[in-house]
Every structure is written in structure tokens, then in C-alpha cells.
Amino acid sequence: MNSAVEPGRFDIVARIAGCVPTLRPAEREVAALILDDLASAARASIGELARRAGVSVASVTRFAKTVGCDDVRELKLRLAQAAAVGERFLRSGAMAQAEKGTNRRGSGERDKRRKDAAPEPLATRVFDEIHTALARNHDLLHEAPITEAAEALRAARMIYVFGMGGSSTALADEMRFRLVRLGRPVASYQDSLLQRMVASTMSPESVVVALSVTGRVPEMLDSCRIAHDYGATIIALTAPASPLAAMADWLVPIVASETDFIYKPSSSRYAMMMALDVLVTELALAQPEQTRELLRRVKHTLDAHRGGGERQPLGD
Image (cartoon, rainbow, N blue to C red; front, side, top):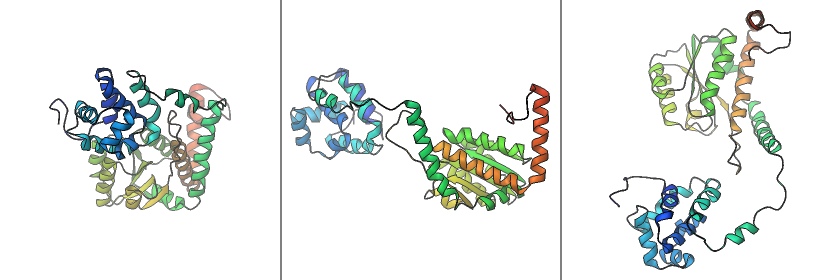
């Protein structure tokens, strides 16, 4: 491999796009062909790549070495790995970068494929995706062991909420905020090392609430495994067929509904928030007198501090 290129797996799409301005014209044709359809390029023979790009086989071989591969075989392997990410993340962005350095044939045909119809309002599109995610997960919650999970929270001596990444990080704190109002001893942790440390201090009186849409984050799996080894109960809000779900004592299923519209945040966080609210509400109803008194105190304290009326929320 090129000595200037680090060993191991690298982002071949970014590498090709970054090299475009310095490539020879024939190599630019190869780059544009590849970035237009990674999966197809990964399956094609060297001769087919050369033919479709309108260049020589030697140009394809030279291109592979220029982008840091030993040969075309390695190039195709890396393209297959990149294609596994999903075409919805590759089409527009990668092609636009490649076309900065080439006037590849066929751009007019791509323009013709653009939709002529006016797009629906963005607010409508976002709302529809959120609604779809909520409706799909609403059905799953009917079968989830919400009562049992809420009882585990009520009986716990200490509750630990684990979240990592984007939405799960924020919702771990959201879970803590909800449980604090119900008088439960709770802490939230998003740092992987802290999660491991805390997990090693747990006991059978501890409960971990693990939030993960995929249920496949290695660090969270390790932390939950440690906690489980020390006797803690695991409540997982996660994908049903995930490793985290298999580890859970009580599973509250979350199913992501991802679409090809990649520019907005994932709607799955709304599904997780709904599951979280259902779980916490079940806990509140399991201790109605205590909950009513604690919420009255919170409302009294907030109104005395900021003023307000009867229907203002418990918090801002």
C-alpha cells in the first residue's frame, strides 16, 4: 500500500473525493463512475470499469494506487465496505464533490430524473415521519412489560441511566429528570469509562436503564454486562433483536423508522421518548399518593420562584 496512507480500513469515498482535483483526466472519469454507484463499481471487473469510464485498464490500476490501494482488488473491497453504509448517504454528496473536477457525461440525464413536482412543506414532511415512528412503536408498547419494569424502578435502591451517542445521551438526562420528580434515587451517565466504573459498584438492589436505539454500542454492552454480573437489573429501551435486548431483564422495544430523507434528525428519538414517558407514568401511577404530593411540592416551589398559573408545566 502507498506509504503515505495509513493501514487498515479508511473512508474510501472521502479519499476519492479529496483526490479528484489532483487526478489525471482519465482517473477523474474513473472517480466519477465509482462515486456515481459504489455498489456497482465494487461488483464490476477491472475491464468493465475501464469500459464504462471510457479509459484504459492501466488508468483504472493507476487510479487504485493513487487513492491508496495496493491494486484494483483492494479498491473493490473498500468500495464494497463503503457501499454497505447505504446508497442514501452516498448519491448526492459524493457525486457533487467528484463533479467539481470533471464534466462527466450524463449529467443532463440525471437532471431529467429530478422530480418536477413541488415538494411538500418541510414541516409536513418532518411531522409525517415523527407520526409514523410514534404509530409503529405505539403498537409495540402494548406488549411490553411496562408494569414489571416500573415495579423494578420503584423497588430499586439506586437507578442508573446509561445513554451514549446522539439522542440517547440527551434522553438519559431526560429520564433522570422524570424520575427525580417521583422521588427516585437516580443518576445518569453518558461517558463510557464512567459507565464501566459505576457498573462495577452495583448490587442486586441496583437498576440500570439502558437507552440505545440500535442496542449494538460495544461500550454500553460492556457496561451493562458488568452491571448484570454484579446482580443489577437491566431495563433496556432498545431494538428487539439487538444484543442489548438479549441481555435485558425487562425489554421495552424501540424500532427505528429511518427513511431516505437523511437531512433531518432521526425520528426514532421520539419513539424512545414516548416509551420513556409511558414507563415513568406507569411508575407514577404505581405510587399515586406519593407522586401527587411530590408533584404538588414541585409546583409550589416553582410558582413561588417564577410566578405562574395553574396550568403551567412543571418545569420550563
